[in-house]
Image (cartoon, rainbow over the protein chains, first blue to last red):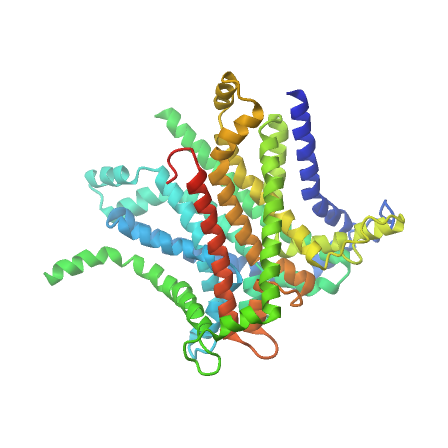
Length: 269
Length: 286
């Protein structure tokens, strides 16, 4: 038993080492002047200053965040609206919505972007606008995550009873949905919104295909800086990774708070 | 009668925005790609010309082979490492477990472009580790070229591990200690337990994870693009150049290749589900 545990620990240390290694090296590399011997030749914060001082760095991070927040918001809204109908009136609507929301799983990544591009690029209307295409493709791309997140949350609360109770107490169904159901789902909505956002912020393929040079996000800035000094690239890599990490960590924190609240509610029952 | 119908229809109004977006940006484009794949680039009429071209020209055959090879091998290796990691997680201390889980969920966010660049910084032509190894007159990395199938494979396996392990951990948690004790009481050894109880119980999780990892590898674009821009024959890369290439675009051919890529994915996921159905012994397969 003891040896089994040791073996398992050693294996996990090896896997963890493999996973942390590129990250660790990138991190150290971002602080060095040059690195040719085992111990780096010198330390500096110069590259951080350069990146942070770069005129278009923060704006491109901002653009990256903006183009990930807006689609998440739209997607969430679209799905909540369908849930209004499926929860309060026609349950079969949910099956249709679910089937549609799972489609982007098979049309992953580049195909959806290319399909939308080839369909609307020649349109004389606003539909050929690259930013609009990008926003809408992002909306669709995260549908599976947003749907699943909201759905799980909805399953966890007893919607029918809550609505019935509200209606008996004299409120309208509409009021019950927005004042009782939605507040109960807010944790789940926030969690899936943040996870969707971190996915979109990390995207490069779709934005490259649809927006090209027209909308410079942080990921594209990273790509464009590929011929710069390695330290500079490593600083950008780290900052972008940290942003994604912070967004998903935010989701985890909210989820845990939600869980604790739910546990408390159970105890109080 | 009519007013009754209208009344019945009013609750459907909130669904309309969703349907409009889904039709315009998901269903129509998907149908468009599927139809375009069967369209002759010259006449525009229905034809199998594109598929014929793909399956006779060596460059396209090589592209499909490369994609499938890379996806299968990286998925199998990634799944194996993840499986052992999830298994190992069941027998270590709580503290080790939570540390490893944190590392896994952290590195699951390390993907795409930043990941590819990190590998270039570490193992690329002027990568730190490569320089250090060479400076020490060691030859560990002599046969390894990051800008080749090996490099792409390594990065693919890297991003499969956290994803695969995180997906498998819940399946392992579902295997109860009591079952092991019950099996031990009936004189089953550890190997017999895993072969007859453990693995069949894990099958749905394993197969689901296999499908997920395979689809991820098959459609990965950014990593490969950073390493080799458009010069590496993989389906996701080839499809993109066929649609948006600098010279002549060949959308019909690109569409046909997209159809093939989606079919590959659906077949693999379908086979995974079928395996689960055939061999799962946990009763309710849903």
